[in-house]
Image (tube, rainbow, N blue to C red; front, top):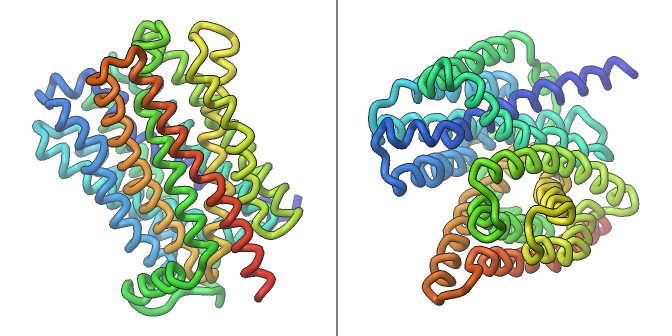
Length: 418
């Protein structure tokens, strides 16, 4: 292995570890929810706001500015600064005494975490061969299931001895130490070279993204397809309740089994999505998007069957694993396609826009719609309201399939014109 390849591999490992820490910090509030809610006297609405809009609204909007910065400044230093901020606020979360203090900490955590992914994926896109970008993005996004699973494991290990407050303080201290290491050791090759870099102000970056939205059909279709799919995946917030209320599982049993399936399946999916997307791309431009179209087209019958069969069977667990895998297969191919459809100097801004559409519009809208559908079917007296709501969400997700194929065609056409 060449020195350059080893260096790129080391960068990928470091950034993936930071992404694991990113999601662990983000989901630690949920992992400690049974202790935090009664301790602070939070209502269900307040806890829902803390885990949703309070964080997501700030994270996605600030992400646009962070993406613009990542296109213009030293990305390693930006990552270190963001990591230090969100880790310090994670520690501060352990000192919160009421909803307002907790909300302020969550908003500032969103500011810090917004700096990571646009800068990280922009760095990786420059350090790896184009033919491997989906795989690299998929490996990076293994931080999602590993971080979420890790937050629950961390809470289970340190909670009995340190309590939820001590857990937040400890994880925050780990993050601050990691930020110091990133500042000292991570380098941005663009800082010492004349690589592509966006010039100007935030306004210039936003105008560049506006130009892409007006004139780059493939980019718009890719964002639309991913937003629709993430909207449908928002139904996942119902999964644990569905296991318990309609598939006959005890709450603790469902937490353990579904959590393990998501950790294993999500990690495999992130990896396989990258491998499959890159393999399809080698067969022609737009291949990563065609891969996603075929994946969800051919997988739709199995995902539907998963919602219809009884629990406590090998088939049920196999399909649950498949559902977790397909959900995470999206990110490697999609993020690679988004970056390839814009000029290199605007890659981080494109990633930030992807996160805004996916998290704020997709996940935020999808979560709310899934909950509203359950309430509707309960009021209508349906025997299995959660199953029906999840099937409706999957039906909405099917709209992403033609969008992926159209986006692939538009990307291929744009490259042919160039």
